Image 1 (cartoon, rainbow, N blue to C red):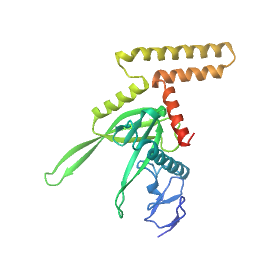
Image 2: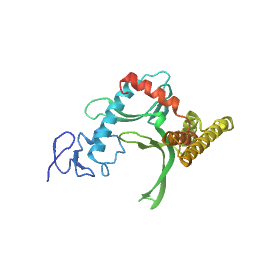
Image 3: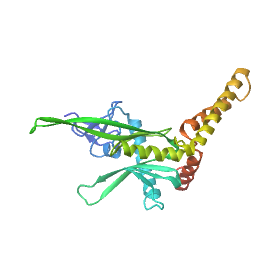
Image 4: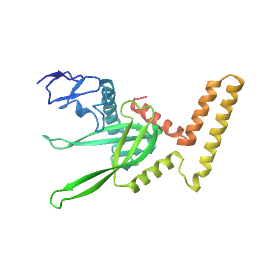
Length: 251
């Protein structure tokens, strides 16, 4: 069998041990594939993307162990996703059982709450066939798909949830966090953000028409105002995350 060299650790690997990446590089299944979290696209991913993700997991695991474990108040939990509001960070964890020694190991990717821009509901169906009864049954799986802005490594992932009602709770939680929930009690804030966005966009357009100065600055202000109207004001969450990561040594 043809042998290759693992592009990450340099080990010689045979055909059974190989995982080929999209750019033609190979990594070993025994060690280096396991450095990535579940969901990383090895078939479509490149070596630089894998290396970036491996660093993301290494740093995220260290941050999770120091800033999330034994934290008071306890982070809000949605399955394997933990949200620590007081430090502006959230973590996705993966627990792995050790085979030859007792215990478990935890890998994690840590994200800024401020960078979360999507938490969409998704589902898929799988038909299974029972040979005894000669009938088929449909099983549905439910997921929350998280998306993040400007995140090196894996910037989106799907987390399995019990059902649509569980996603409704997740959506309500994050909407409230960002001040964008569609409730009577918060509709005033939504209107204020939309009004500010309209004014900023109008100011930027006038500047372009008149050929005035600081056109780029006004355009950036308009973009930020529109983002706040759509995604809520993230200023508080950015400040909390920067402070926590600065203390940890990542900023």
